[in-house]
Image (cartoon, rainbow, N blue to C red):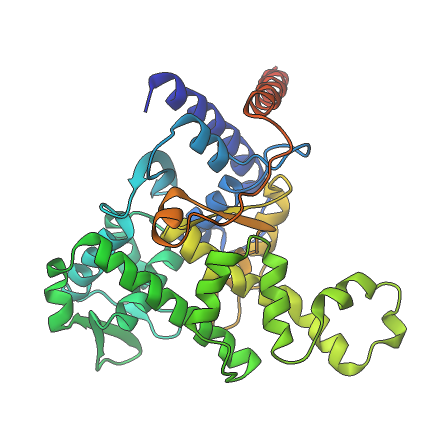
Length: 371
């Protein structure tokens, strides 16, 4: 990573910090401090969101342009006592931080860490104690590691009252006998099983809703709408047609169609939580792409509005599905190299020009603010 490229991304992160801190001051919630337990989810959506309206070039795409590699260079925020900084991790099949975090999870469980019974998240005190040992200091990430660890049978729950405790299994204690690439392939398969099982609870125990369907989303799809279409097709609903005609024929919709439309929003957040984020942010097989720039004020206010997170999945509100996703170099090497690339409307030079103009506007606005 060259000094020039690092400095360019440091400027992007200043842009993030300015937007986040301004919006954070306006959040009206008694739970504002919770945001630092899920901070990477805020950063993650910004990281994969378009920086300007005229093209869907995200910070992640600029990282690809600037730090070309056979793996994936990922910028990661680190949180300590509400202060945050940024560091870089290189992901590859041979050296994968997610697999290293599974080792850390085994160690943390052996050290008697406590987890919330419904969410699998570390309890508040233990989050402060252990979170910094993981790649992402984010409680929803740690909860997902627990789900993968259980699916891989490297940890098991033990009897406890009110909270969850885990211990390493014999397989977990000997996890180092698997090389990183083999462990990664197992984690990818377990993630597909978890994802299909989550949607089975909603769409029923349909034969086609299995890990193979999820793996096909990785290998064949690049539009999130295609995932919606395949899921709703299981229950005989043409959700795409309903979207297109929702405003025209609202009065003609029957009860089933209305129920389908009302379920789209939470289903989208589940697609993000159990497919896009695990295979994107955590495993780095895909790169989500959000069409529009991130709205700090709207997203923070929504995620931490009192009462919005009162179900069993108390971080679901901070997930939202991207419009597109594309394979990363790791995804291409492990899954397929023949999948069509997402076309960009602008060249790299044009993207750089737009970014320069954006940063110039940001600098001008910052100067005016300090006067």
